[in-house]
Image (tube, rainbow, N blue to C red):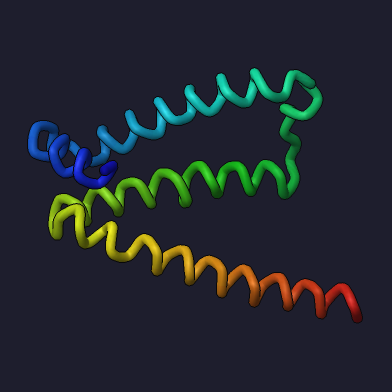
Length: 111
């Protein structure tokens, strides 16, 4: 349903980068409100200059921003069915890569 809705919105509002920015902004606000309601300890919200900050930046920029833009681009060029068709494939690739990386980390910890 989401990809069908995106296809309809892209016909009315063709600015993909602005649409991606709005989508990310609204999801950030929604997630922040939900997270603040669930985790009230302020010490868990602090970010330091370490791997945690890098992972948050990576998730925000690469995973969310670029992925949403690529999905909108594909919906605009090929249609919503094309994007929906490859979504299960992305989950399989993620599981395979996670299993490989997890196994590699396990081997490194053992040596």
